[in-house]
Length: 536
Image (tube, rainbow, N blue to C red; front, side):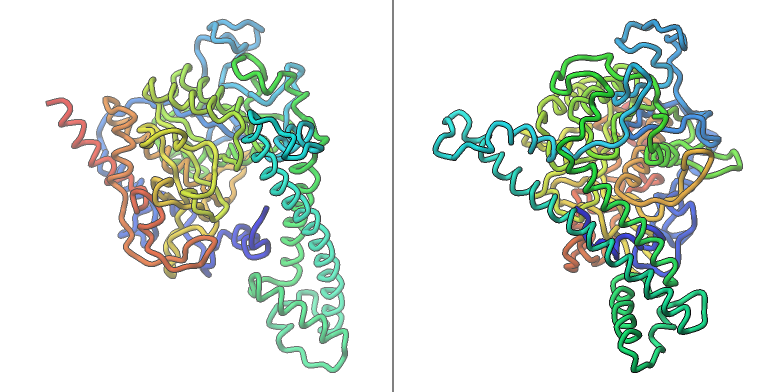
């Protein structure tokens, strides 16, 4: 369920993170000293590497689909040379027919694609409700006690979230209607076609309706951004309302079954070949995956759009993330597909609070470890401490230590006016490894467009891009060495910040294992030193 519904909406819409001046469009690639923003020093790293040879690195992006035809991305899309396009034959015998640029695990053989999906808690509620709804605790078999307790937690959480979503949708509709009404009223009262918070504050009247409208608008402006006109405020609340309505309509819909599009059994975990090869995800929203891929690999130096972090990479497009919660089966098989087809780095900008087939995902993570593949994962946007709260997948299951090939990433901001962390970002002294830029990140959008977005979903590909850069110039390094480099080369930030979600003032270094922000320049220098030592 969305928190701080108004405040986060406007911060996200403008990418300001409570700061008044937006950063440079390419701030995530810039240098803290030279450019006075908390970027990862990408350009400084390339200045240091000038004249050196690099090796192409394959990065898999498991996401919502990627516009592989985008002008700033099409030159870096991976092509499976062992597959003959369009012949309907699995030429390379990997179990996937015509997987030329990757695979779509949430598509059907008839060409349709899954767009909207329920949340995992909805699917778990539906599954367990059929078994336990009319069963009292005293009648539960001993072997089912743990599952029954799990059901009770699921039931309480689902019903609370569903009721909140429904109530919130009604509340937003009422607020929107009131705003539209008062906007028309004050336009007429002030003889102005654009009403601002300053206009509202100057109103002096004894009319009861005018005073009631002033009071309401003042309260809303106090919760949002007083620099916005009332027209703009209404527009963004409309967007927010649409999202809330979507939650009520899709996320908690017990009757929704879009998996029939795929045509598989989602609980049969060991099958492959389901899905289709439409990695773009035609007919669905592929903004997220396109934006993520652009951060990693948008063609550098071509004079258009943006420069991605990595300059000698290819992107393997893997579609497994709908609008809603991804399924464990698809996540695990997407990881295995990436590994089996040569990816050296896998970016995973997704997550959820429940994971019924956790072990299958962990088996895939361990498989990636055995093959030396580095996995980069977004820590999540719930402003929670994931040392306590769940954000799946993660690397904590049944282990005393982290997987050496797993990097969990929180979102940092550009640092103006003391803001160093995204207000939405999850954090964790034990569970989040590093932070990276994730606020107001300008990258690719479908149809040769460009757009700002924010989230740990953006911080993860920044980190994946730096990892790919390191491997490109120092290909002898192993996945665990690259993780070690990323962790030890961070730029330490010894400042106090407001802890996401609580507002408590804490040290930035207390929010992650490494205590700092990814730094490409320092990572390259450390990689060079480590590579030289290994050759002696």
